[in-house]
Image (cartoon, rainbow, N blue to C red):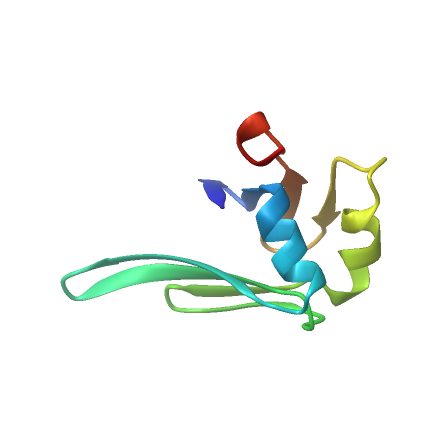
Length: 95
């Protein structure tokens, strides 16, 4: 999972194996820690909301999972603060 933060927006790119994990109901986590802090992003295929607390952001994808799973779709965007975009980034590494 690749994560990019910009003002008011989080962009996440997932590969085919990560999409398969979401489809199986498994959450995905990205974490970076440092002494005294860190941040964590969770993509939750069973959740319904975007919620943040301190250095943690949980993104519920249940309402968008079917659209994200559609081969014709490149990704989904969840409006709000922050706006979250989850895009498929399928390279040849797992083909």
